[in-house]
Amino acid sequence: MKVGVIGCGNICGQYLEYARQFGGLEIAALADLDRERAAAMAERFGIARSGTVDELLGGDEVELVINLTIPAAHAEVALRAIEAGKHVYGEKPFTATVEQGQEVMAAGKRRGLALGCAPDTFLGTAHQTCRKLIDDGAIGRPVAATAFMIIAGHESWHPDPGFYYAPGGGPLLDMGPYYIHALVNLLGPVQRVSAEAGVQITPRTITSEPKRGQTIDVETPDHITASLQFEDGAIGTLVTSFAGQHSPHDAQNPITVYGTEGTLRVPDPNGFDGPVYLRHGPDGEDELIESAFAHPNGRSLGVAEMIEAIAAGRSPRASGALAWHALQVMHAALMSSEEGRRIEVPHEIERPAMMDADAVVSA
Ligand SMILES: NC(=O)c1ccc[n+]([C@@H]2O[C@H](COP(=O)([O-])OP(=O)(O)OC[C@H]3O[C@@H](n4cnc5c(N)ncnc54)[C@H](O)[C@@H]3O)[C@@H](O)[C@H]2O)c1
Image (tube, rainbow, N blue to C red; front, side, top):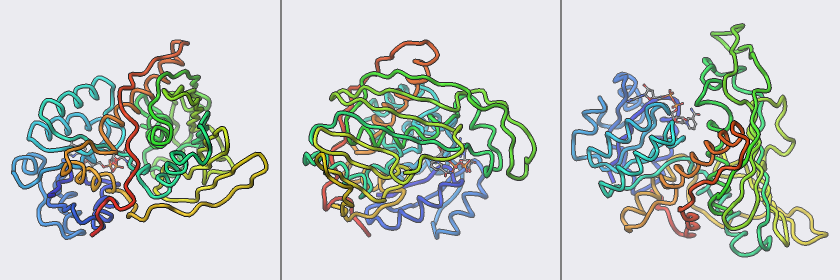
């Protein structure tokens, strides 16, 4: 399928690089508000066409748009692409607000177009291996999970880190999608959320160039602890923080799933691969589990899977509905803390199906 990319910033190169692995996915055109940025990226990756968003959406060549714009533009660009009759796969978060998410979901449904969204890391070989272990009963019935994303914040390296500490930023909206998608893949949808969130460290001093020495007032929680009640019964603890000086010692495996017969250590959901450890029985020791899947990893995997889904007339696994669910879970956590109550989350989505061992075409 011919695919166009809108938004040629930081993350775009990774998509274009890894897209080459997938036979059914051909990047045909690039667009950006900044035409020169799109042209430079097209030249670097040998892509024939680049130009404005209108030019990309105007033609019939492109059937699917990858939306790699900034979060504030996700909804507007997705709605324009849907209006032009294109399937849309977006970067996280699904949209900046819950209301925008609803609008994009409704527009996709109305036009009968497929919606997909990152993070797709849960489709990676490591996370699918974890999924297979759970479905095969390796840990018995899952009863609980913990997930920890604890870092010091981005002011030590990002050239312009202020937006991470403004409303719409914060560690939950920035990193939560990776963890929530991974947990829903393993445990199913979330039914209810309660949380405590606070601004733990303010102001922040920027130590990266070019704004070294400037300070940032933190205006959104920089530490959020959420309890997630999963529909199937498991209870999760999700901690996202820009207020920890050191990551937990097992940063490589920040998610643990506890079952009635064993424990699973799941690799960092910000990556597609990594070590999977299973401990079985009361006296068991961590056993390193070999991957049960061999498909290519890397950003674009979710798009390649979505193209297969469209051809087969089914929903994509890294679906807009999943990303929309994750957005509602995150907003429910922030609301729960603000209002001091538990929040019910609409959870009509299904757990995405496990990857087929032979799925996702490689080039
Ligand atoms: N940078 C990363 O490491 C990273 C990792 C994972 C996910 N993401 C996500 O990817 C998305 C893009 O991030 P980025 O770091 O590449 O951002 P970026 O700011 O580097 O690039 C965004 C690009 O989109 C363009 N753009 C903005 N609004 C537009 C519009 N209305 N129409 C056309 N073009 C528009 C900008 O000109 C810019 O070139 C974000 O949603 C982010 O959350 C980024």
